[in-house]
Length: 331
Image 1 (cartoon, rainbow, N blue to C red):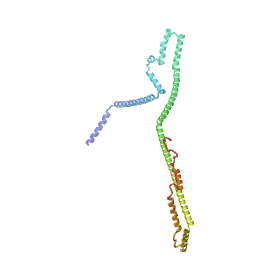
Image 2 (image 1 turned 90 degrees about the vertical axis):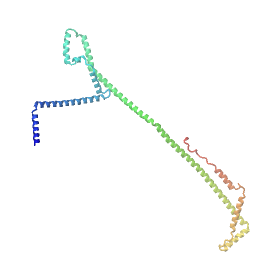
Image 3 (image 1 turned 180 degrees about the vertical axis):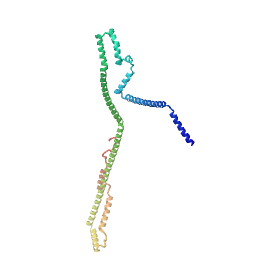
Image 4 (image 1 turned 120 degrees about the vertical axis):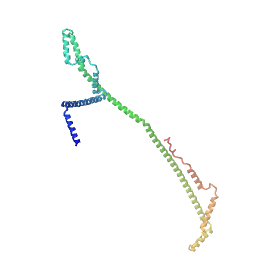
């Protein structure tokens, strides 16, 4: 209960204290606060404006030389660097001050004949006016014309520089490609060497096969000659043996009668008993006699063998290769 009373009494004291503060003090506090916020706002605006001006200046200064904006900024900076003249210091560059001062000083000078307005003076004034007019009006036009012409020349030179730069880049690329020509030629010659080696091996194998075919043909010819000689010797032996048996049965009556008797016995027996083979024995004796006679012949007496040796000697010569085979240094 005491805590509630104390809290309420403290709140009442704070309200009384706030009500006792003068109204002027409260208004002055609000005005000062508003001025502080306004000052901070304007300072922030000024800082933003300065930052924008600084960014714009940096952008213009980053432009290339000869740009119109950059040239104008540089001219303004040069004008600001130039010292102020006496006329500008006295404020006579303003016509509102220069006209009264000129009248105040000029009229007494003319009346007192310090300056005489004669033809020479008028001529000098006209010349000065002409020069001033040329400087102030015609000069900028001449400058603009010369500046535009210079810009056109600059652009033409820039185009020439771009063409030269592209040509130089192209030449550099061609030279870089030429650096790899050696490797390209090496690989090309390596492939050519491999092809030449394979071609030489193929030609060598071709000649080896051709030589083998020639040797095989000669061996086949020798085998055919040998077979022909054997056939001739066999046929000769058969002919002579047959002729000898025929002559034997023709000239020898006893052999003829024995053969006839043996044949009759075979017929009489009904083919069950062949008896003695007279004809077979005659052929056997003839072959035996031919062998004995042939073995007694002198070497080189057989015409068939002699012809066989001649033919074999003619065929048995070594074959001549048609080509030298593959040679990598000759291809």
